Length: 151
Image 1 (tube, rainbow, N blue to C red):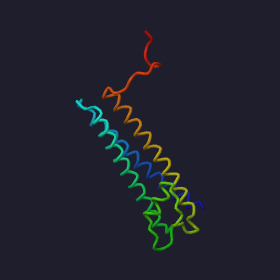
Image 2 (spheres, rainbow, N blue to C red):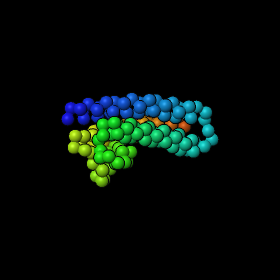
Image 3 (cartoon, rainbow, N blue to C red):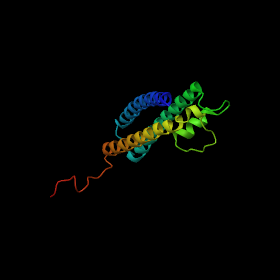
Image 4 (tube, one colour):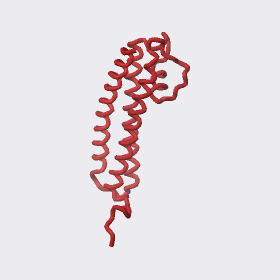
């Protein structure tokens, strides 16, 4: 059991590092896209959000590939199993259950799911932050009554 937790933690740390790297790149891309003002701010907003989402989706796919490679290295599933599919099902917490880990690696699925939930939440936070900063930069936000001084 300790080996499973150790391997799961190591892969999670690798994926967290990968996600941090991609997050820095996504934020830099979003900032660069905001430099010039545009006559169509809503179109710019859509472009920035779509680009950020695509970059984050690529990161999640790479992270699933790391899990799939790990499954192969430790022989976490029966021979002939589709390890990429198995990793996606676990990482996204879809949980079809049509492929199950071998007995000695039964914790690998829940550890993968924990990592996926954490990183999906992180991505949602990044998307929200990019949205807020883009709206502010393009002047598409309104100041709420609580934040504005009273006349």
